[in-house]
Image (cartoon, rainbow, N blue to C red):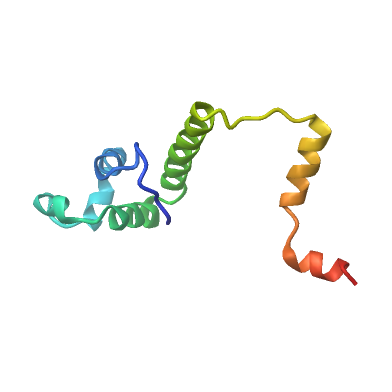
Length: 103
């Protein structure tokens, strides 16, 4: 699982999330070793054991951060709904289908 270095995705944040399901700590070493664990390892163990709730937690943090950056840097634009829909559809086209339709 990819976890960027964003606020809200620190080791402490992941350990706090893990405390919601104490059984996950059976997969961790002794608590005294937590400070030596890589953040990515913790995220991967939590994702392996808990699955979608951890992915949702990470994706929510990423979206909140990206939305905040877009707002702070004035990167948000308004599009006509028809143009926005056409743009959205154009992003969902695979390169294979483009190659098939070129001939």
